[in-house]
Image (cartoon, rainbow, N blue to C red; front, side, top):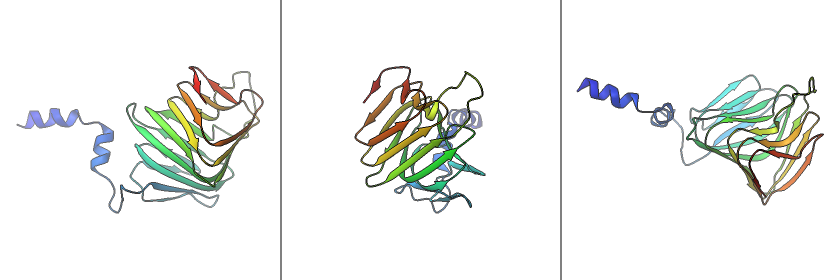
Length: 193
């Protein structure tokens, strides 16, 4: 029945369609690798959910992502469907932005940022305050956010908060140093540290 088939297809979400249409060569047993570089960002084992626009990386599908490398002007955006989760592994990152949140988790259900063992990671928010309406942080999430791992994370901002979330924020195990003009951690609900 054609009508029934169309109705069933309409109920399949964009995420589910993307899962069924993974790019050839993608190995779902491995994380998608994102390597930051001022001369160009490279993606390996792309699950079809990573979009690069100049020095901006946008993650649009659930899954696991390894990020490494250094970029002097760039950002990472996570923009998932509301029921989707992602794992972001920082494996030696130096990320700086003078225009926006270096890491911005815009939408989804839950995102885990894992600071991998024996790695040192630096997030720099070098925006200039132009009004009293500074919001967010160098790492800014609008979904439940877990930050954990056995590595080291330095968060530095000249703008506002260090790590900010409008939902639940959990931080455990990692070595964390935050240097900011406002709050090291800013959250609406209760954080779990």
